[in-house]
Image (cartoon, rainbow, N blue to C red; front, side, top):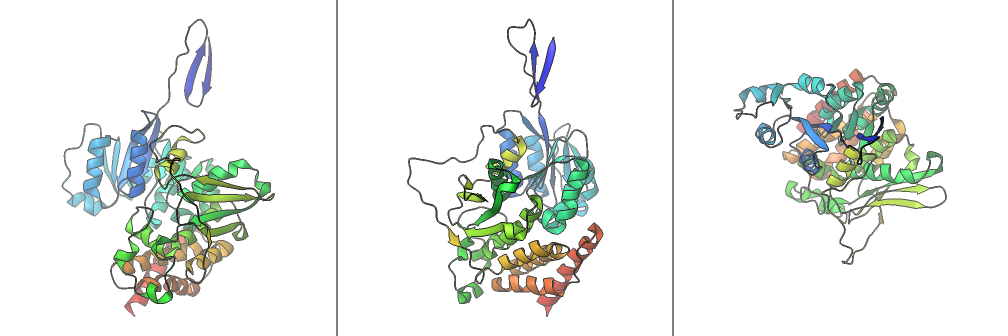
Length: 407
């Protein structure tokens, strides 16, 4: 009897009338499982018909939500990265077979386990770098929703992935769209990628109106439902600046091969333009479950739970030039994509601290991006930093923002 293996399914040939099928379950570790991406990932896994299994879940401070997920999902490992919060938390009785682990070191050890096939990196901010790094070092497939990993340390991360033969798959809707559209041509045929931005709630605001934006205003995104930090980034278009830097390293592009357009409907998630003038777009209703599922099942496409188009309803698509004066964050993103080195880490850390200042009322909305530029210009640029140097500058940039806010 001959045995043929293809895509995790076993088929036997011989005297049997029907082939025997033994589908392989893909074990998934979800880092940041209580956030919006993490919750959507668990929906995708639940709808997979047993093809995907969540074997590890992690959270930092949302421990009640994490415990609830453990009871519902019953992973093998539950990781609370904030050790002090974990010790103080009144944990309910967890299901048999669920092991509670505490501390960032436990997260890094878990993603390296041989039982883990795919790691979904969905921790928000620079805190997501350590788990992503550990997973790549272990040669895992990483479904990357944490754009800050590549913004901070793009060359180091992509080099590590190559050396360890690890796969780095995009989960951001824009980068997933580019990843899908690039398959329509060869790298030598590419002219540029075009990232789409909704423009957020303030795309038509004047400078005076931007000065009066409140936290409630900034958190009312017209299209997507996200966490507060990402929602504010979408309003300043800093999210697009970070995506420019991420795309530069993820797809090995130059800054001149990246463009941004405003697309209020958020239907076209990004486009790829080839040298012959053809533009390939990836379109779908705004639902993060689709890019999450594509990363978890790639290179296959499977039925899923993401929203679908209703083709019986009329609709329209609009594209507008991105106004660099109204959204100066885009210029910062392009500058960092061109210069590389330490710029991405400093910009990301300064933005995280500035957004936190806006959310707690100590900084105005229209001061976020200028403060980020000021910190970026003040730092000592290094074109080839080590990971330790990037970590040091991350802390320096945050302290610099706090000092500026205090003054």
